[in-house]
Image (cartoon, rainbow, N blue to C red; front, top):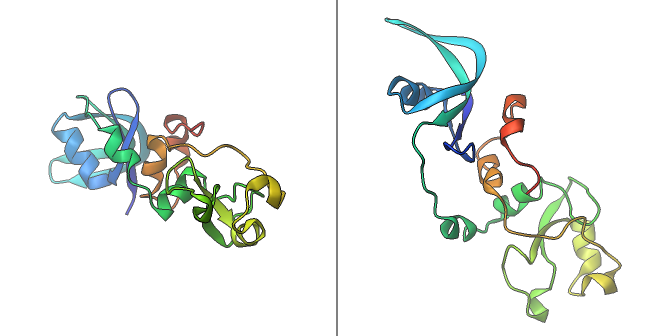
Length: 167
């Protein structure tokens, strides 16, 4: 089933929903279409364009504290775009603590990164400088786009302008 990107009134990515749910939001005038697929859904009373990106008409407040607390393996991978933060590999991925737990490192967004198994073994429980590794970019809490990416296997080309990959 196809997915539709749902944006807040501020164009901030909120969610991914099914085409059916998106059409219901459109029919109830709770959203507007920003990008269409070119296809149509046909019903007894007419045809409706299949949306790819919709924007809600009323603002939805999302508490950021609750979103930032959801640390999971999948969320760390999505934030780091499924790439090892030491070498850039996309194979045999694991989660690594920048400051090892044995040295007091916590399970926080600022201390967790995606790592391939060889880099993780090379680093072990040592600090980065002793292991001879450098991070490609410093870890930080993910933006809203990372949580949207958790729900899809592939990002449609029309979504890219609305998803901020700078985070």
